[in-house]
Each structure stands twice: as structure tokens, then as C-alpha cells.
Length: 119
Image (cartoon, rainbow, N blue to C red; front, side, top):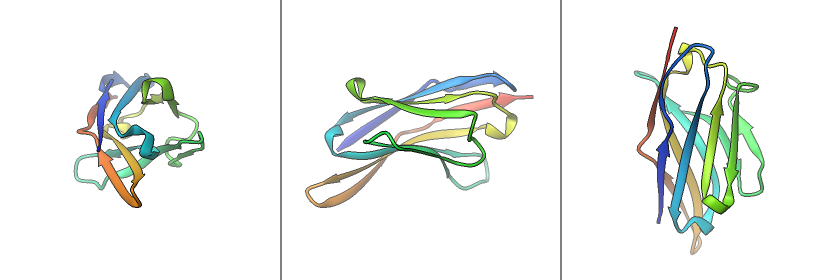
């Protein structure tokens, strides 16, 4: 089992920055990759950024050059640094982890962190 807790959301003006954190606990050694997704009201949940255990990263086109995903393995924490925020970035941001344990694939979600960008 893996538990994920997000923090760092809030209200920010357009052009501002926020940093989200996702703290993982439990069988963290089994985690293959951690990602950030976001879901705006009335829209589907979309991938924002992903980082693998080897440090490889992937970003949605809409956030490339503005968002940076990173991880601190000693703290079992993944960060999402968000710069140059726009109102279109307003959403609930969810942390997601994929793990492989005893031959099975598991997927875990945090409860989400609200990010609101005012114009």
C-alpha cells in the first residue's frame, strides 16, 4: 500500500508561482513513477507531468517551460513547481503513483490540492 498526501495548493494571481508537494508513504520502494494530474470543473482528469524512478520526466504540452517536476528520494516527496500561472491552470491537482509489487500493478491517488489562479 502507498499513501499520497498533497500540499501547497492555494490562490495566486496570474503570472505567479506555486509549488505543490506530494509526500509518499508505505511501500514506496515499489513505486515505478509518480505523476501529477489535474481536473478542472466539468473536464476530464489530465496528465500534467510525470517523473520515473530514474528521473526521466514528461510534461503536457500546455505546461512545458512553465512547470517542473522533481523528486527528493530521501524524503519520498515529489514536487511540482508551477511558474507563470494562468487562469487556465485552475484545477484540482492530484498526485498519482504507479507501483509494481508481487507481480501486480497498483495505482494510487492522493485526495487532491486546489489551485486557483485569478486574472
